[in-house]
Amino acid sequence: MTVRDSRDVPRLAFGLTTFVLIEWLLLRLGTRTLIHIPGLGRFETPIDIIAETGRFAYYAAVVFLIALLGLMAARGVTRGDNRAKLSSVAVSAFLAGALVGRLGWISANVVGWVGLLALLTLAALAWRGRRTLPVAFFAASTLAATFSQLGQGSGGGLSVSQVDGLLLGAEMLLILSGLSSPLLLGRLPSPRSLVIGLGAAGIIGVALARASSTVSILILWSLGVPGWLPGITFAIAFGALVTTVVSAVGRRDLGIAIGLVLLMTGGVGAISTYQTGLVLAGLLLVAGATSRGTIPAAMTASDGDLREPYLVAS
Image 1 (cartoon, helix red, strand yellow):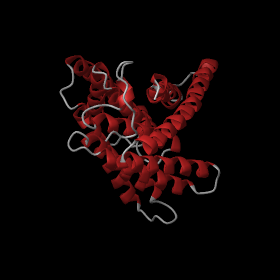
Image 2 (cartoon, helix red, strand yellow):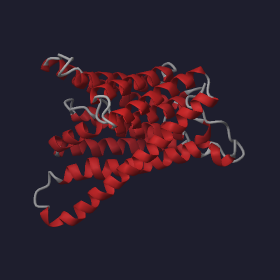
Image 3 (cartoon, rainbow, N blue to C red):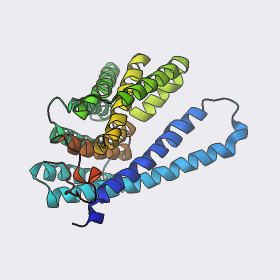
Image 4 (cartoon, rainbow, N blue to C red):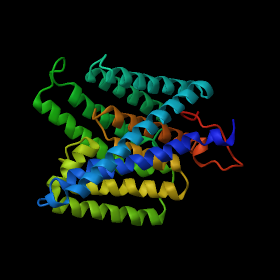
């Protein structure tokens, strides 16, 4: 395997994360915040530019996502162990389901169930004990949120109270995932990351206190949960997540950093195949990062130390 080939996974992951963050900030957060601000009619052109930039980033992110998942699935089959091969089957099933769903051959509900099964499979294969509790909480949150959606209507039969209970459970589990995210590091976070995390928690806390209704809508659109819990819980969980990401970047644990960003921007529930795909990519990266305490080989390997990047490290 050549040096150039070994860098395909990190390059695609970096490109995907860049476009996802642009799409998330401009399209999902930016435009949906602006519509709640009165008197912006005279700024229609700048707002249109922001929206179009966000849409371009979205389309670019979709291309990078398909390429990344396809490459990681292929390498899992050809170069991985049984765990990697099973992960590859789950990812391939999701990609196939998304394709035939796009063609209209199966219903959106079926696509949603396929995505959920793929996600739960990857989460189970990622389990490495206490260190991966954040992944388990995230998977459980996704299960509750997705079932609250797919369990309604024809063939479902969930009552309103049951849907509300599932959404509340999903929100609580998502908060637990964020709060426990430092466990993924396998060590204490760096002092610098703690300071940045506290600052991020403070910003979110102030935003929720001053514009709770708008921020709750953004939480629903971004994360897939209704934002019913006290704002302080979201602020602390977000601060813990930022602490983990910053500390991981500082220690070159880029699999954890990028994986968590993709999980956060993917959210929970059957929102879209695009966001489900982001979650699957994030799970694969986090799973490789927490296996034997190392990240996927190519994510930090230098020119003189290039090891084979597996779908999920054995």
